Image (tube, rainbow, N blue to C red; front, side):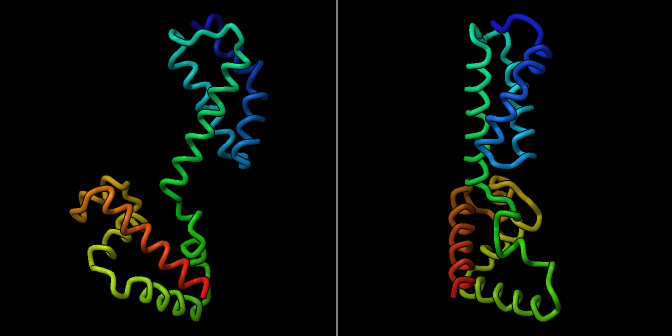
Length: 159
């Protein structure tokens, strides 16, 4: 059981937790979020956590929070993580035409439901479950189609 004031733990060990998160994630904003999540977990589970050595406990929780965040990012990359999608919209008229041609190549031969899947997931920011429900596929079907489109897009960009 965590005895004492959570605020005191935060003041004393917050910098250590932040350093750990920053080291693992390499991003200041994500590290700050992970640090906050670490202390939220401590607060949420304070009645069941045993902390003879609070620094070790916080270090371990912070590491797990960061690793979970990294796993989540790998499973569902954000638009910023997609090199092609990051460039779309910040270009000249000619570049937009080329992007449209590239998108047509990516979607050529793809089913209409695959296009709808990509639009729902990326443009409407649907979750895998929401996308699956809207397009009538399973979550794994959505994941497979998006993965195939991503590979096809990267292959076309690397030509």
